[in-house]
Length: 110
Image (cartoon, rainbow, N blue to C red; front, side, top):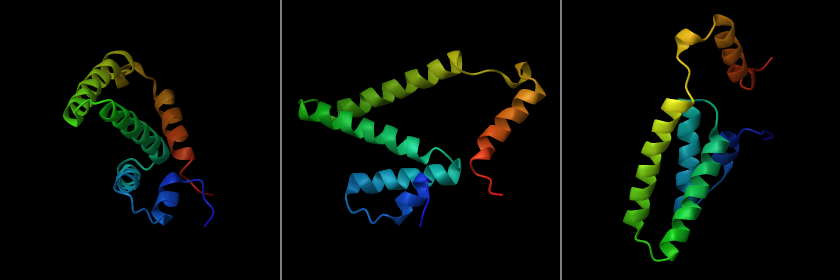
């Protein structure tokens, strides 16, 4: 199989490590729900696992790391909603069509 699709590549791997299996499952779920972004999900999740492990190795309790991630998630969502979203009413139809074409472009064949 020749592909650059992250979800396809991860499906073909026989991953035994529990954390690796979680990452493959995340990619598959991302592909099912959104249809794109699987590689990004794996990269971000891997980095979060890596950094979380570093904190645990420094003696921080895993529950504290998880609680920190939950606080960070809430703050990230708040920031995105406040600063990085545009109400649909403010967009012209041509902008919506361009966004749809761009998002579909990598998934359409022929």
